Length: 230
Image (cartoon, rainbow, N blue to C red; front, side, top):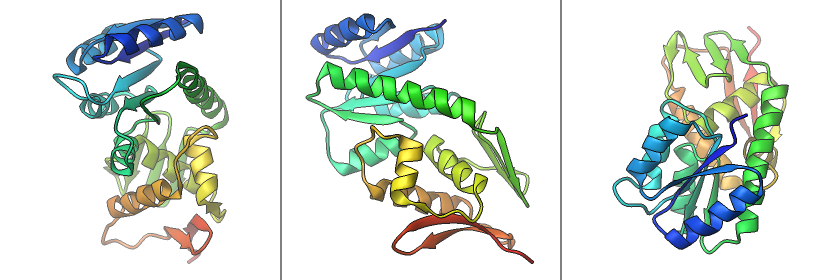
């Protein structure tokens, strides 16, 4: 069974600490010192999860995350010294599964790794792969969404939110429900992350042709996928 975890950071002290803890947990650490090396080793070793420092030479963590997300849904945790909301939201919007701010405890990093991998196992077991509504198909197994036959360019989280809502037409999800279901119990973000993703998802769904479904805002509560009966 593949137990490779790719750790990319230009700080040797951090690499040494994470290498030790990852090994202790029974994983096989793959080390990279910059973004280019991280991409090369990602394709060479096919890790089950990536720990990416944002501020790396040659390619930063955001660039590496974007490139990997263009062809893979492997879990990615970004690690950075920047803790402001803009950087955190940007990381999540481009497809990262979690975001850790330095300084951190190695124990916290390992807890986040376990949580992300646990969510992945649960979602693989519980989900049905394809959800269909008129003009819409969401295939969560390969993260492809088509609208009237056209493939949409959605991020991993946008697809997961859309799939969750469309799989439960009429059910109202609070922002906290969506945050927990998509990002997990261990995520430390807030409801604004959900609102940002819904806003971007809606903009990508904008078409001239009328559809008999929509993502509705339930003011003061959250969102639901509403099917109009005609």
